[in-house]
Image 1 (cartoon, rainbow, N blue to C red):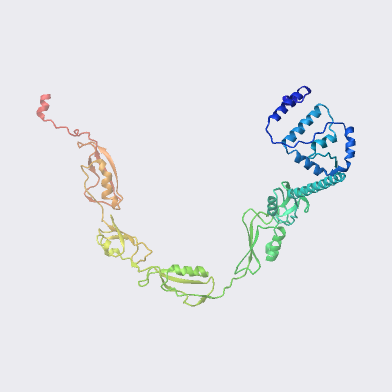
Image 2: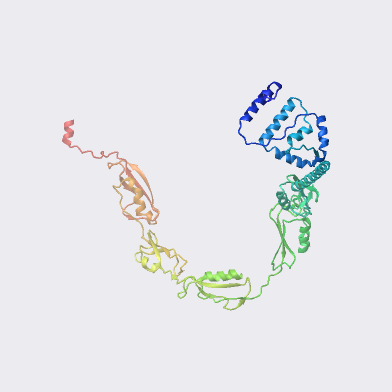
Length: 516
């Protein structure tokens, strides 16, 4: 920038202008009609000439002047010449006279004096006023639009709920602060108070405060009246007045209490009483609807041959109490109706009672298995599943029936088990000789021979000197005879004191003498 400005100093300006003129002369440009040259003169020298040419004075408006100047300076040579001349005048402090300007800018050979239209200034002032007023109006309208877009009129939420408030606040990008308060008058979640009155403008994005009802205080103690002495209507009024929403009046039919009279009160918490009842406690107050009377308008169908499920479905639909009795039948299949206590097409009312007999199929009569032996009892009756056991008996002879789990003559139907347990006598116990058996075999021998068959034989062992192998039974208190079912037996066991070791070969007398 400093190099550029140095070109316009007093010392360098002439060199710069001469170089620029040489460059301009070297350019090949089309011939341009030369403007008449007017020598630089002082204003006083051209005044006579201007007076002589006063008749050629031409008035133009400021707009026309500026347009003409712009058109004339569209040519690069003219602009460059104008700039060079202006710079030269500035550096040489040469005043630019009106005559010179008119001479240089004139497009004709004649010199004209240009004057600005006196009405132009007035028009400009009027234009500025109009622009100013218009701008003010635009600003006011813009502010009005901005204000309306950022503010909203506060509605009246009296009687509305907090849900309504939040919905409106969300639509207007506002936050809601809630102050809860108990109230007997306002319902739960209803608006009790709004901090900003309705109709006022509120800026969007601000926080609104509302006092919201929580309903009545649940911890408040309400002394209950004696419901025995008040009617059902008075009980409803008490509940409504005290907002005791957890108190419920329930009516039910009663054959003993007159219609509309108090029956009972039930508290969910057994520790709560009529004097300590709080609004949050749950209780039911029962009043009588009187005796229930139903019209006999239900027709009884014919259930003969129907399944039990069909009967129960009809009974549930019409609130009829049905008692079922299961009986055997050789003709009616198992599960189907044999008969009904109320004949078909007869009219009955709700909650009436009736009975229906249901077939359990053909019955099996349990025989007396005393007529059968233990070997033949298993296939005595078709359909019966007999389990046979033989046990010792001191009183029942061998082969006779001792007991049967199902008494003789019992009818067994499809729902009953057909299994029966039969016990036959194995007679009185008989013990054989156990001599030579080992001590370790005694538990098995006693169980298999006696106790597994119903006896209760017990025993005791003792040890004694014997030439028999150690552990061998060498003595019995009883053997090879009948014994009672609860017999007690003792066994002597050899301790092997006088016995040779197992596998030892007996030596001859000659061998003994030789050793001596």
